[in-house]
Length: 296
Image 1 (spheres, rainbow, N blue to C red):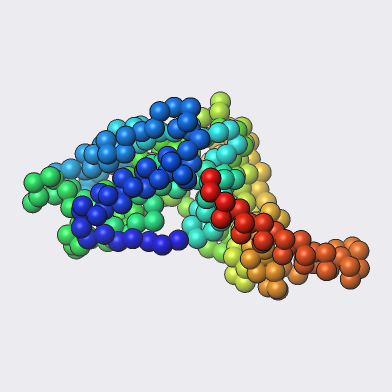
Image 2 (image 1 turned 90 degrees about the horizontal axis):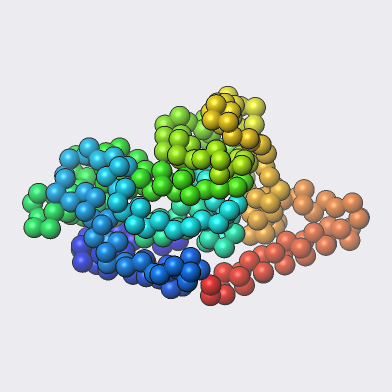
């Protein structure tokens, strides 16, 4: 994925509006065939209005409620997915929205994802907002900087996204980090509190690790047990799987010769099974490559 860091507001505006239009026309046009396409220029203005003329880092997810409400789109049942600490892998797993729709695969997420641009309110400009170094002077950069416009936008989007989930929801967590689950995450603060017990029928926790990386957390680890306790308190049914086969097979389709993939070659049919397993992984890699080239 290519990341863009804009220093010019006009270019940033055109980039965001362009991603909005591309999303509805090419990336995921389905939801907008049944319902009329959203006006991307108006969406951008609503987005900027969320922090216009407010340079203080005191914004909350509520500031962006008009924007996330305006950008709302339907997420089909069993198509939502949550994740923690696996950003480089999640778009691969969701197949850029074809298999699942992560937050970044929705309209509100797609408009601002893949940008390192820091935006903020300003009293020094006529239009009340700015981008670039002026926004993080003497501040910590990033969406993790609570109170910033970037943090408030993603926390607001996370809260809205959670209300749209229904059916079974996978939750991918990085098992190489310790602890794998923390109480101050967007999931704990904004997603779990906004999910509907009447709509979400179950969570499937999947503890994953990149090939060659250590496994530091399991389903019995204290942090995962704490997560399960939070789900129990809310009444959500849940399961937990370590190193799930579908995730490992996807990783091994990219790197079938990696030592961590040896288990997929050990089929009970002798040497022919080993060859067959290798061919299967090769075919999976070819099919996935072809799918990514087919326009949606």
